[in-house]
Length: 417
Image (cartoon, rainbow, N blue to C red):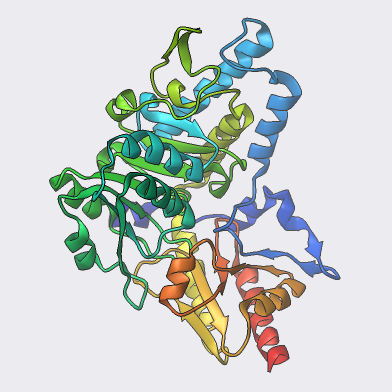
């Protein structure tokens, strides 16, 4: 999954000033003319003009339903929608036949849970998760486990936020029906050894699902090489629209899965005596899809490719190092998630202060960070926390954002004393 050293050395440096010019939202001021330092990218990324223009162009000139019309607008909409599928599949090194469009990572995980796992789930079966999972990769499995009489098994994390891989291996056994795990932790920034985990699971015939929502904008994705059964991600964390996501799957698994939702476009024939269903991925795309979402995500992928994903990753890694150095001497600063090779995410608290108060004070200085449990309540409980503040970096963040963040954090510390 990582680039060879020589590829990283020859990658051109990112022109951050040029990148920032392409994001209109970054050029505003908030709270008494404070410069905006947007550091909430793990929640959602901003959208470049290339994506905004693609969305506008679709709605302004091509707006029509897909697959159901022969007039000019319907033909253009259908062409744009299916070309987007092809583009997204190429980006992920996946087959078009295994690229299913969803409302996001959450819906994709639910689809797999109810259509792939639940039909064969028996009492006593196990679903293996990790302590660092997002609620979207916990609750669907709990729901189907309760229905089938199965149980959830959880692998712990080390104090620095690394997955306890030995403990995970021990919990992987003949009763395991699904091993679902996050690629990059949205709270700690931990990058899991997903290729190794998939290989271990395959040895025991265990299905795998990877939650790639936090990884896809930062780590090159090679789905077919990875060998996982399922991989999920959301457009809005990849500089694309909200309300749209992707489930990558092995086509032969889709062919064996029953429909999850019924309606138009997922059928072959319908009568009151019975219905036959389309092949995947259409079988899992009932109703009018988020056409603009597909087109917008394809535009986001084109845009990110033009910037260079490896250059973006190198830039974000440098930002993380700069930020950690800039805030290192803030009194009472507590950091959570210090695993080697982590993504550009900093979860933190100030000793004696509530995370919400810290976040509000940063906001008043123009610094946008996330606050709360970040949909990882079990992970926070593992560290004895009710919540944290979280700064997360993206391709358009720069040294001025780091300086503003560090300055605002020191002012917050002084105000909370």
